[in-house]
Image 1: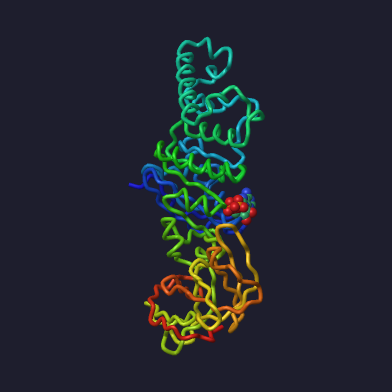
Image 2: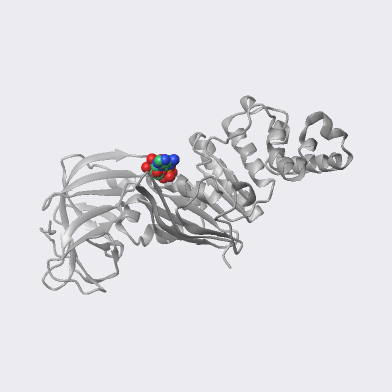
Length: 389
Ligand SMILES: Nc1ncnc2c1ncn2[C@@H]1O[C@H](COP(=O)(O)OP(=O)(O)OP(=O)(O)O)[C@@H](O)[C@H]1O
């Protein structure tokens, strides 16, 4: 049984369809990163799972129970927001204690003076204090328990928000860009911390992020959502190496994957430079297809020694690598290469070069963007002047 599943979630706002049949199953203890361009519906989906909004159609099943009709408070889901959403007038310790107090103390027991005088409630308060202390110690924020959010840094506030979410041992964790307010160094550090906490707690997590390196580095599986549809849910490696759709390929990878439009030749093969690929599906001669290859699989050769003649437009030095923007000679296409700095020595804008593609790294997509399984038919050394435009 999956830890939680979303089945055919649909949502429209004012006649605009935002979520178009989103389904996914999370295994016990799994960390799923949900990525996609701005406005694709990530936060809407998270809010629906949390019970802060309702789907027009579809089911949310947690631990085998359909919770779609339950109120947010009855789903035992914890959510960490980008803004942390801490109560500004409460200390860190009081913030962390809120979900426990709401669950365990009576209304009278929550009152600061009266609560302390009610004997049964006194014991519960002591228990809560201990749980808060333990959680704060495991997140290394015990020295901050008496501070209010305004007296803490962004990173410290983020940890308090995490502690507050984790202290109640939820069935599911939802995180909506919890690291986006931190600076670059702290983000990388906090990534490791969240993964470690997740591993210890073992609570299935749905984590929304804009940051693809965060998604690829943290998640067991990555869900790529484009335009309200979940296009692929797969391991980070498969999402990157084996994208099921051109939009998935385009969304992940920096610089973006190279995409060239071409047509199937008269032998039914797809040509990319001097490489010809046969697709499993029989394609008609003249059918429009796209070939795509990541910048790290493009190498540069002196003019006359590669398969795709091009001209260097611009170079970007990024320290550990150099990104080279080239324009193909035979057609109106831009190809980007990413090479180690040593291979870019002596290169300059305006220079004519040839590109060599790694045959094993070429992906083929049909005109609708669906991936076509393809194998290499020929990879000759002959120079190709034409890549069909
Ligand atoms: N309450 C609402 N009423 C009307 N439209 C809404 C509402 N909430 C969200 N939308 C619209 O739904 C779409 C998806 O929004 P959502 O916030 O889910 O996107 P997102 O993928 O989380 O974007 P971002 O990455 O920018 O946060 C957007 O076009 C947004 O304007």
